[in-house]
Image (cartoon, rainbow, N blue to C red; front, side):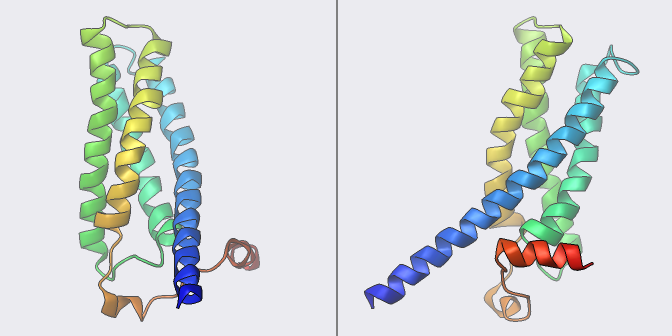
Length: 170
């Protein structure tokens, strides 16, 4: 009984750890995409429109993130209804983008910060940390969900070595 409970707790921890690690990897790449586009836009074509630049960079990073999270991070939890999942993902990311854009707005209009570095730190560091915490829990419990009957039809979670072998075999 205790052995069985111990194994269940260990499996739960390992599954959560894999999800957090994959989510972090996807988030890291999305951060690079978002940051590069945001910096390019506020340093050039949209230098007078930092809020709009944050929205544009966030949308591009969000599209990448949906694909990567759906087919890699939460592939064992994705539902058969792609449309519902995508709509929920977009709503969740709109809220996350609102958190980041809100941080830019507060920095610029409330605190009077106007330099590229100050606005970048507000949107892509402080705002990103807050939005990332929100997104992880929203993805896990709201977006990438399946009911128990669908779980039997989906592949089970593999260990990281199997994931690497799968990627290199393609």
